[in-house]
Image 1 (cartoon, rainbow, N blue to C red):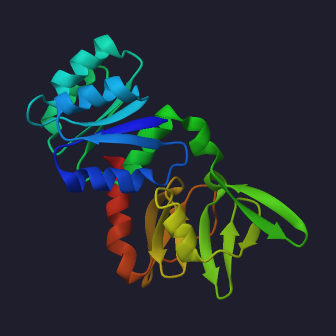
Image 2 (cartoon, one colour; image 1 turned 90 degrees about the vertical axis):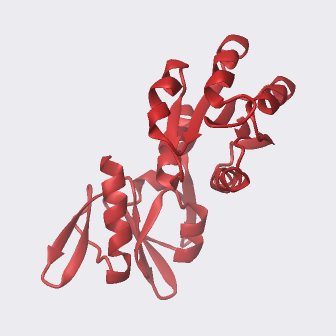
Image 3 (cartoon, helix red, strand yellow; image 1 turned 180 degrees about the horizontal axis):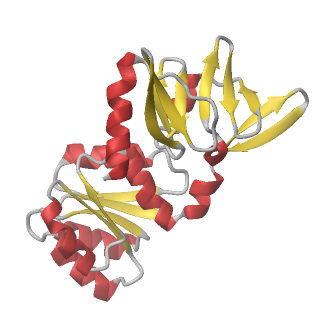
Length: 231
């Protein structure tokens, strides 16, 4: 999916680029700092998708989107902005989605899943069990737990072992896994609540009887994720 990032602030463009690097099917063809520059690049590259800031000099994002709706009606637009008052204007020009800055990994993942659901649903890791190589879909993983040499992959009906470290899996799939303990990652799609048990804080996961422990260090991140998911 050929993509152009449009934002007048370099740190904002760098953040989007960094988040998109985790998606194999997205190719960033160019970057632009204002609407007019973006229009020229879109005519040159004919992309499938653009990430479009709204508040920019020369030509703002909404003005550009109105032109693109006539000239490139198939182009998908994901608006990015620090101000939520532009939401209605964004959807008036048939935007695919609207992301508030700073853009969160899980929110971006949700937006992209509208455009390429097959890739999102079929993301997987491969593991070797004895002499058999298995493909495990990421969406089926409830949580990951590090047990010294190996990482336990907890599924609804079984537990498998991966040779990759917890840190490697976290770095490969930051949009999917949330760290709740130095030895545990949970699948964001299954994580729905927190339970207090005596002095422990436990994660509640859909389709999972086990309640992994949330360490004191990661409780704030876990609560923030749940709050943002319900917004």
